[in-house]
Image (tube, rainbow, N blue to C red; front, side, top):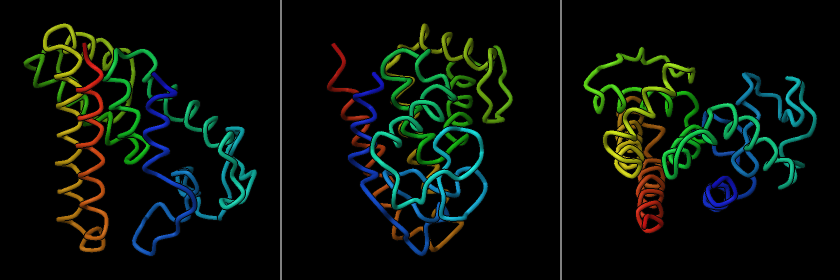
Length: 188
C-alpha cells in the first residue's frame, strides 16, 4: 500500500517549488519547510523538530522517510484498509489534519452519528473504531470515494476564501479525481 500511494503522491508533488501563493512555502517532493510551524528553508529529517537539511537538498530517500513517519504512520494509514489509508495519506500530505476532519465527518454520516466523532482532526482510538464501523457498513471504496469528493469540496471552500488559490484549484481537483480513479481501478 505505502509504496504505491507514495509513487502517486510523488508523481504529483514533483521536485522543488516555491510558488508565491503557496502557504507551504518552499517544498521539495511536496515536503515543506512550513510543515513543522517554521519557515526557515530547512527540513527536519530525523523528527527531532530541528532543521537538518536545506529544502533544495532534501533527497528522495529522505522524503520517503518523512512521508512514512510523519504522514503514513502518524495518521495511521497503515491501519486502514485499502484504499481508505491511501486516500487519507494523500489528503493529509496536501492538507494536514483537514484530511482526518473530513474522514471524521464522513464516518459520522455513514454511521448515522453513532458514535458521534468530534471533528478535531485528531486520529485516536475513537476515530479508528468509527472508521472501521463505516468501512464495515459501506465498504472501503465508498468510504475512500467519499473522502476524495469531500477533499474536492474542501478545496473549493479554500478557493472561495482566498483568491490566491485560483492557480491551484484545478490541479487540486484533478488530484482528488485521479486518486479516486486509481483506487476504483484497483478494486476487484
